[in-house]
Image 1 (cartoon, helix red, strand yellow):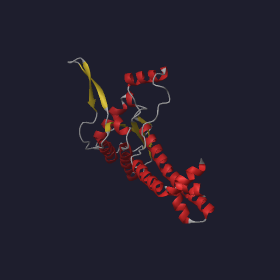
Image 2 (cartoon, helix red, strand yellow; image 1 turned 30 degrees about the vertical axis):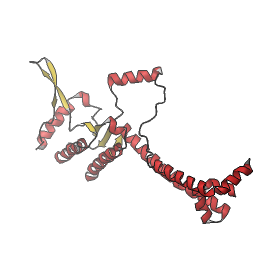
Image 3 (cartoon, helix red, strand yellow; image 1 turned 30 degrees about the horizontal axis):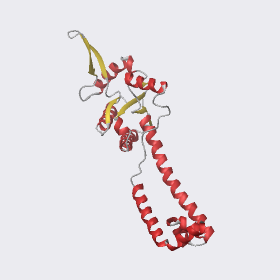
Image 4 (tube, one colour; image 1 turned 120 degrees about the vertical axis):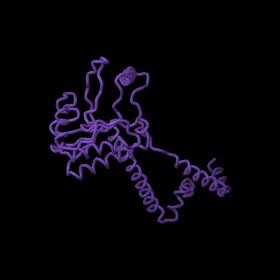
Length: 256
């Protein structure tokens, strides 16, 4: 049997080499369509009771898996120019494609009672451009008088900015550009005032992990090619054979 296979290969080697070459080109072309998935596989079956309860919880209370949190500790944030820059930072981030909402001490609401309509209304604490330090001090007094925001947006000179990312952007490659832009603007603010800034949230963490996986995958492929090429060279002592082995590995090992 093996003798017949050998005779067939030797008699039709040109045809077989051509077929393998065409197949290799086709597979290389198809490899250009390979993409890194940005959606994490579910650990539980869709019919599992814990999974169903989790989905019901998200439908009822919403999902916070698309929020990026920016944190900064600065006792002088409520200085006029710096606070205006903090507001500008929020505006720059809000203008990015894929950003749905943003909440910070520069963009908060107060709950007001409307006696005529018999309902509560949300009113922005900051409605116009802040022009004086005295005006900003008044805004700070109002903000600190609202217990709801304490330990959520501020706590002992530490301040948070919560950014909501569009879910479709979050589950696609585009989230890298969004996260990079957010980080760039935030770090530029921190560098200008010599502050230390921190980032958290699932979109930010997953983006960092995806970048590392992609980087390490490329490194692994390069190292695998180098190690394989070195082993082949040690066996055959010829660069020509090493190159041929990558294209016609089956025939190379079979012939030897």
